[in-house]
Image 1: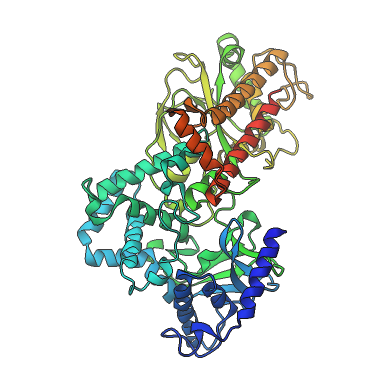
Image 2 (image 1 turned 120 degrees about the horizontal axis):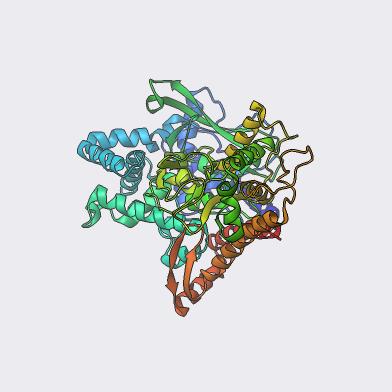
Length: 607
């Protein structure tokens, strides 16, 4: 309620200023039309600072387009900008907006100078040798999209270097460097701020991304000073591109002034973006895009934020790394864990030694019968190179998760590993299995890396068990595997899958007198082993999250590497940062709490 009152107060204050004063009349900015400004531009100006110049800049372009097109409205009269507690600036409905109404239209002339197409064309005209060099560097690093990202990032820096440039008025409103303005992404945080992520999967991904950007900077500009482009500025510009520019099948790759004031609403977003293709072109790179429109997709009452989706299934890890925020109670949260099979569980997994290949066939049949996902056995951890993926630039991309395979099937010498962090931002790694797939020979334990979903995330289940030999049963198991690989798997489904993989040949028959029912306790030994595996994994991860912030050494269990040892002074500094109350800190706490909720639910299922 406090946020709602704050918005109402802001809107009332902006409305009292009136619409006819300020720089938006006939004597205002060059190109402005002689008509009263809309509430939208006046509310942007009221934000103060660089936003005053930006409001004038945007109004001139939008109103000029309106005049050129016969006076059509590019801004819905209900739309206004306001500061939203904990979310920076957002767009709000000053009065009800109906589904289907266009709330904001940005003409091509306003965003084209801030597009990747324009940046690449300018770079090729001014420095063709560097463009070729960047393409070779990107290819050598396994991230060909880096060349385009870098071109747009450098364009941003060059535009900001000249106050008279086409995009300066807009670009000057972007969040500043290294946490000096909120929000900022972890790539720009101080080492102590980054250390607040210790014990979470996000920590390792942030470190890998920082190393990738540093390596890319050195390869692009040389290690002796960055060729006039400091690493700090390059990292900031690249982060701005990845977090603020839009892209996708229905969108040009460009900064969209005004549109980027819309905050993230996820699957509950009440608006969506689209753009018209003026000329289809031979491929997506040659498409000519027209105006970008924000359309309301559901009736929105007065006082509510207008939001879009930054990724319908984005977990807090992705939101924080890309956009600098994490939401509380994110139902799409996921947590990578490692299940280690030892003792009775390892003996059960090696049941084919005693019972032959028939037990493997039974395991696969039960997985299909109940539409359960398959697991992948991992024998060693190898960190992949941390590339950048253009799928992270705007659009709706939930990212991937752990691969689920039947560990009893023949395994090639190398496989493509589409784990969550590689799917979102890294090249698929190549892993080599040491030991035989079916028995785990040559290793003291079998390890499964899985992604566990937030307990509030529903996971589709098969309406009724199907004959395991039918195509429908195969399809149900495959569908469950895809869902688990994309969105993670809830603890209850993970436990059921684990029970199947630990069948020993002594399991009691299921209700149909044939295969056991993996959703219910099986044999006493099997049940104890399966629950012990879940309990050990969740306890280890929970202990690791807490220990990682205390003095001493630690291990990032989800990433599988040792953490730098903390002394008392540094541990104290980290704790102080966590109590700062700043927006970035609140997001870290949201992320950590979401991870704990997943592990606590996993622990509950192990008891």
